[in-house]
Length: 321
Image 1 (cartoon, rainbow, N blue to C red):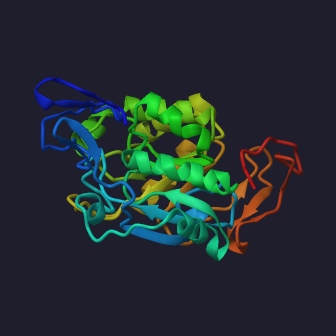
Image 2 (tube, rainbow, N blue to C red):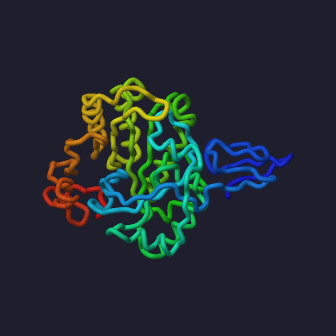
């Protein structure tokens, strides 16, 4: 889907903002959409490299059915090339894969108290055709579809997915285009557009991996959180700690950097959390009166909300439970 044929057996992919021009027997930047005799084929349809049952908070989604489990699946391929990729071994090449029949997928997606499927690990938007197929299968059984994505997708295919998506976590890797250009081999604006469009249709949360010396300045965190707030200040932001991975060998993010970043972001956003750090208070509190809403040290128990509002002060809480 989402390509046009050109002259001399070339094809032009329009799934993501790279708009790859692909010669015969070559693949696009995602490495999974290949021109075979003038037709664009997806190489990862139905091919699964990884799966697991995860707490919903691991995605991370803190405001979507707290305390529940989700069946996570992923394939191979990605349309960005982040130097710090945590999943580079499965993203960069086709490894051992499996195929799971739809009925078995349904069985797996309800086992261990799972509420549905999270499409994750590699970039699910370039797994487009198979994800689109499974979205229908899962939705028909009133299960939940969750997309964990870099947000690097064009508007038309995004809008085709959104009616079937119950929640998304979108990576916002930086608020500076130069970071996307140099470190991720992409661009910022399409990701901001994905956040804005998606926030009007489904539940979204945003994650930023904070890397000292790259995207960690307080000025940048201030700009990033202001930008999210301009879309909707109730969008939860997860500031995650970086650890060395793939091509990037910088030291892990300083804990004080994360705490300062959280304090800055909280000036603009209702909900800011720190990820990849043990022992930090990541309970959810009412932004207005600080009543505890979700106790994450007690199985994600929802305590202080009724009919979507804080039970103490009536402040509207952005949470689905």
